[in-house]
Amino acid sequence: MESVQIVCNRCGKAFPVDGVPLINTEGAPELKEKLLSGELFLRECPHCGARNLAKWPLLYHDPAEKVMIWLSDGSADTEARMKAAVAGEEFEGYSGRIVDTPGALLEKVKIFDAGLDDIALEMAKFITRQELGKDIDLLFFNLEGADNEITLTYPEAGQMQLVRIGFNVYEDCAGILLRNPDIKKSATGLCRVDRGFVECWLK
Ligand SMILES: [Zn+2]
Image (cartoon, rainbow, N blue to C red):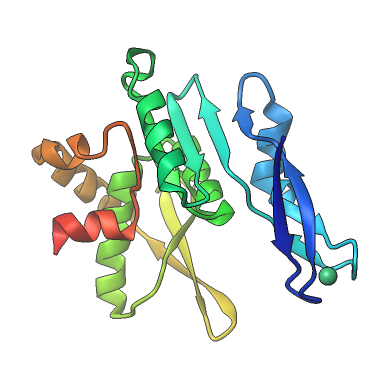
């Protein structure tokens, strides 16, 4: 177990949290269910009972889909160690990602589970952001319907807003990726594929 101290968002007191260091989707599918429901990271404060979103270093590994996602605590040493571990031959062909929040981990899992390429999806978000003309952080919500419509969310005025984009937007981005293999090549090993990653390439 990973043990961390977190500070309650209501009473401000610290308390210890134990969390699993690894979710292997083949060995522990029930942990993935808890991750998807959000339950995994919720911890009740022993002082005041408030529910808090906890976070600890966690590796998500889906061997069938060849996906490895590292929820980092920001430690450069640990990240370097994780990168070296994933650089081994046994992980060739993997999508290896680093994320910094439980929400970002959940989003990545949903993207890969939907069979989408997260780089193409980040590019589609980039385009959507430009079309909306808003400086917002978009999150993948789902892919559904006969037309494979993609729904993204973002917070505004204290509420969750939904943006629906056509699958063609995503497909156009996937096409750009095919024609520019360097983009994908720059995301081998364990790396962050987020807003900053695509802005480096598209700006
Ligand atoms: Zn509390």
